[in-house]
Image 1 (spheres, one colour):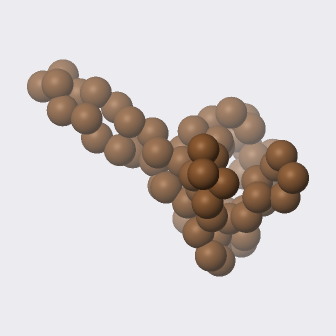
Image 2: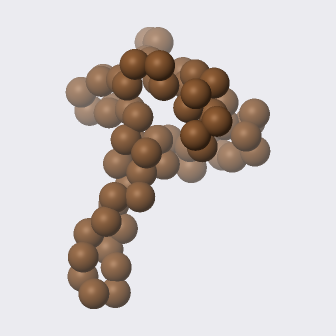
Length: 65
């Protein structure tokens, strides 16, 4: 999926999970898509699934990204 959308695998991994950013006013904001949860191996139906060690993303997920 990463190469299909012209993104590094690491960047794709970051934005498809929770991606917390601390703003200048010290607020935490989640800029991630939250369509995968690595620690719990949880997926979002119709968007992601884990196969072995790797995550797969649907066309819905690619369109969203």
